[in-house]
Image 1 (cartoon, rainbow, N blue to C red):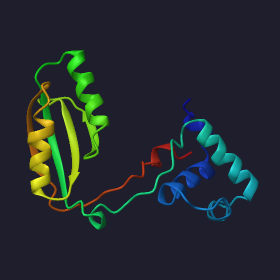
Image 2 (image 1 turned 30 degrees about the vertical axis):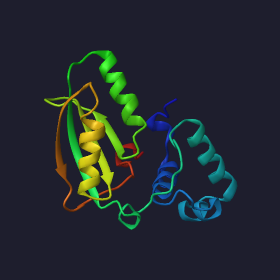
Image 3 (image 1 turned 90 degrees about the vertical axis):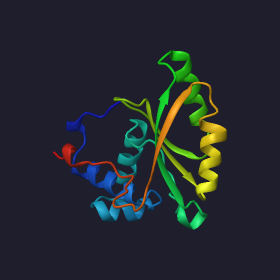
Length: 162
C-alpha cells in the first residue's frame, strides 16, 4: 500500500527524516524531536510501518572497520536475455555475501553490482572462481572505488512536503 502525498503531513516527514538518521531512536526522543506527544508519535510510526513506508529497521556497519577494504563496482553482461538466465543469475546474486547491491540496468550492460571484499586477491578469486564461472555470465567490467564522496541510505523527502 502506498501512502498518497496528501496523507503525509509535516509531522510524518519529520518522523521519517529522524528515523532515517537513527532507526533505534526511542519513541519518546522521536516525539520530542518532531514536536508530538508520545502516543500520537507512536501511532504515526505504526501507521507508516503498516503502510509499508517504513520497510525495515537496520544497523549500518562500517565496512572498513570490518576489513572490507575493496569496494568494486562491476558492470555485467549475460550471455543472452532469456528469462531462465536472468532468474538464475539474480537468484545466485541474492545469495552471494560479497554482493551488497545488484541492479538490473538499461544500456549496454545487464547488471550493476557493488561488491565488497577484503583485498584484491579476494576480488580476483570472486571474479574468476564465482562470477565468471557462472555459465549465464558473458563478461564483467570492474571499476574500483577510490574515495567515497557521498553515501547515504536516506531517501529524499523534499518532494513530499505539503
